[in-house]
Amino acid sequence: MYEDCVESTGDYYLLCDTKGTWGIVLESLAAIGIVVTIMLLLAFLFLMRKVQDCSQWNVLPTQFLFLLGVLGLFSLAFAFIIQLNQQTAAVRYFLFGVLFALCFSCLLAHASNLVKLVRGRVSFSWTTILFIAIGVSLLQMIIAIEYVTLMMTRGTMWVCMTPYQLNVDFVVLLIYVLFLMALTFFVSKATFCGPCENWKQHGRFIFVTVLISIVIWVVWISMLMRGNPQLQRQPQWDDAVICIALVTNAWVFLLLYIIPELCILYRSCKQDCPVQGNAGPVPAYQRSFRVENQELSRARDSDGAEEDVALTSYGTPIQLQLMMAFLPFQTVDTAQAYFIPRAKLSPRQDAGL
Image (tube, rainbow, N blue to C red; front, side, top):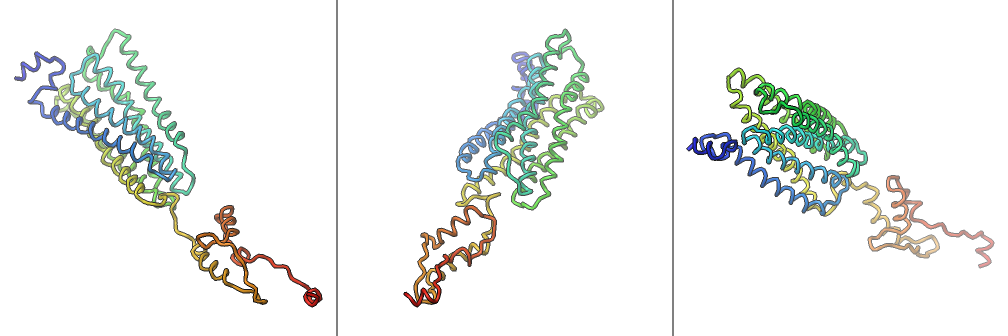
């Protein structure tokens, strides 16, 4: 069965090899990941139009781009299951670094926005956050394009290189991705410092996601460069090590970042009032306005004349509402806000009347 599969499919024999356990497991996990990611993309599209808080909505386009990157990672796993050749090598060396750079750039942009929000500042606009995510990942794209172009134009191709040379080139191309991981890790730690506790949970998701991703990358790079040669499993285990790390990290992105963020988004959409940055306790003086207004509307002056105070349907004077609209963060003197100055007559004028 194995020999027939090799003869009929060539470089694609791992796709039909029933004896290769790692290939079957990774194919299944990658296929399930693709389906789950598509469902999460549709869920984000459905919930985006229901979000009322601008600070929360501004990051949603970047998270949607992040999901597209994760979808590409799951799809890229099949390029490592297929044996290395001129076509799959170009796809591997180009997309692996670019897709991971895009994902970590989105996390970095989200963490940078959270650094402002946890300190009570105004959020970046959605275009700014998206521009940061795309702009930071462009350098990895340029590096990958230059390397693939150089390898395609010169005489020595990937199939002519030794396994050690292939692994060295592969890891060296990912130095910028490692820098992005480290930068995102430290920026996510900065989200823990600030008075706004409700935004810190987003920073925790990013911190844990990047921390576990760093552990995965340290393990697979160490195994690729040192473990496989020492165990004399090079190049048999090289593709398996990279593919396992790829699929595992993609699932970490979904389980530790996207799904928790989607749960928070769903809970906020079910609430009637805006949440996150716009929510806060109602000041005591605002709670007492209605009671005071009702008492003042029934008050009488010393001559027995009734004071006419224009009230709205909620029992709040129009004059007070205007003051609250223009001075929302200043304490209002209720004694000056409610009483309208009345003309006072002198004793002679009063006697004359």
